[in-house]
Length: 342
Image (cartoon, rainbow, N blue to C red):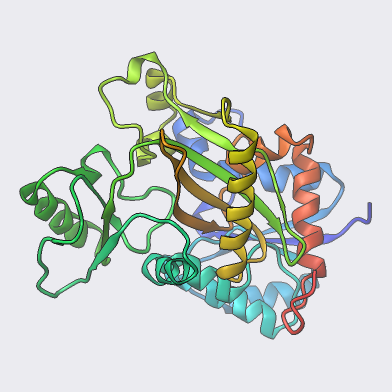
């Protein structure tokens, strides 16, 4: 394996320490992804330089000029505090002809715009929940064509940010309360979609044009979770104490017929291609008791920390964490924005 100079792009507040010693779980969870990636890349023998980025693209330019990286490992989820701006950074990397990991700018933009991505998928006859967008600073009405219960969340935020047990609403009063709360607290448009009862599944897709999928992962809840909805809230995603209390874990999905697994894999690749994604992604799905598969959303550049859905799925496929990171790097090195050849 060739040793590379790797510039790891991350939020300036998430530059990890050299060791986990002395830090609490609550502190570690903030920068665990950054720590896992940086430390593993170093252990693999690469020359690694973490770079904190907030609102100045100049720091990226300077680092590229001085460090001359073979590739930039992109862990940025926002720029200038806005999650919609991350694709501009990737666009800049392309302008510099700088190799990078993860999704291309167009794929990032489409994946972040949940309404537009859903419209594209609907055009291609992908089954997904019916939805309606509630913009900021405009009058809105309770969507008559949608059936309660409804799942109400931010149109643009990722990582379950702003999602809680209160996100599922059962009547007009709670619907208005939740929409107003998200408008005021997050300052983003809101999307309301019909809540689909079923198993919460995740499937990882990797590649540029030649795609492969990893085993389906399921979000599982333990015996102490009968009083909560089985949805991926912010606490479910990031609160380790809450996960332990309710026995929450992501595991390889069981008791899914082989034919259904094939349908899920083929569907996820279609979604990936429709949205023009590259590098790696996670497709979130719901599987009903009747065997219907609903696409909830596509996540470009999902969490690549050790133990999260992508790495768990890769491990189930016999791919170690270091091998997964190397595959992601190789896809980035082979990606050509001009020809889109992997």
